[in-house]
Length: 340
Image 1 (cartoon, rainbow, N blue to C red):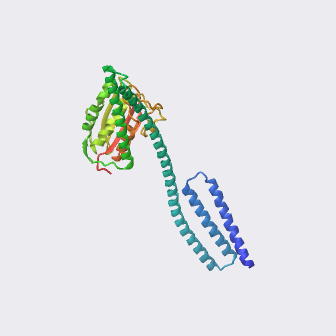
Image 2 (cartoon, rainbow, N blue to C red):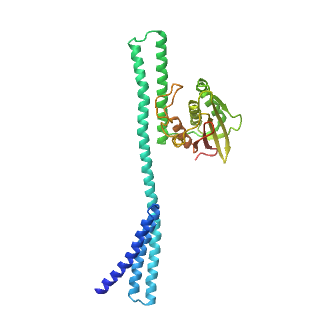
Image 3 (cartoon, rainbow, N blue to C red):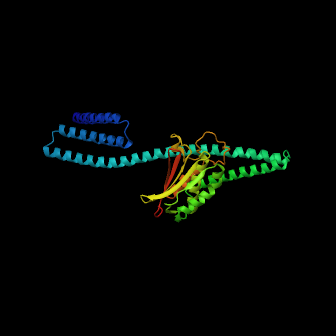
């Protein structure tokens, strides 16, 4: 009985010393990754077992041959345990990191949904209140002269069109986020798409005295879905026109490099604050706190650039923005080969 107690004491002391060193190592590595902590924990645990077995085997005065057999067995078991433990630990660490990232993304998406609902509610409530007031004024004959009645009718149509565009944008964005967007890929000449987009943005540009300038050459052919690509180009042009001061210029060009096609829209808006650059493509971001549309021209619901990013990524491409000396430059990159 005394021998068993001594063996247990030797194993406890040896294992405890190694385990204490492992705990100290974990404390010193407090700021390291989960994978490092798991590996250190496994190494400390296995070494504690090895230390206890070796200490007891040495204290038992085994023959050299028997001692070698015990040590070889312990070392082999330790190597296998460490290999299995490290592999499992890395998977657990990856799963933990993925879970944390998923929770973070879910929180960000939920915050974005709440913000979007609040902003859209404001964007719908404000024109609806105006529409109701004008409808009641017409119904009660508060306004009777022909010019005022015609102006009310025009304003009702304008606000109705704006709300229709907002609802259409919301529907398209919901399709993108739900993965329900179905793209029909074909070889699309980028020059034709840009020509149509310039024609669509021309009335707004003329109203704001903005020059739309397109490069004369260098237009590639891309593998894309033409309606969605046209929406991307139109949204970028309209966004640049809206935020460029009167008498400014919006320039659009394209080309190929590194096996990809690129399209760039540059303006003279004066630039985007550095703090806002990472949020430019967020849903409902307009770069300003006020949600009331500016009187200088029709305003969007803050969804245009979010739709651009969604559609470009659905094509297997990417979109970015950076400041230039006179404004900002949006660059879309699309694959020219088979869609992935």
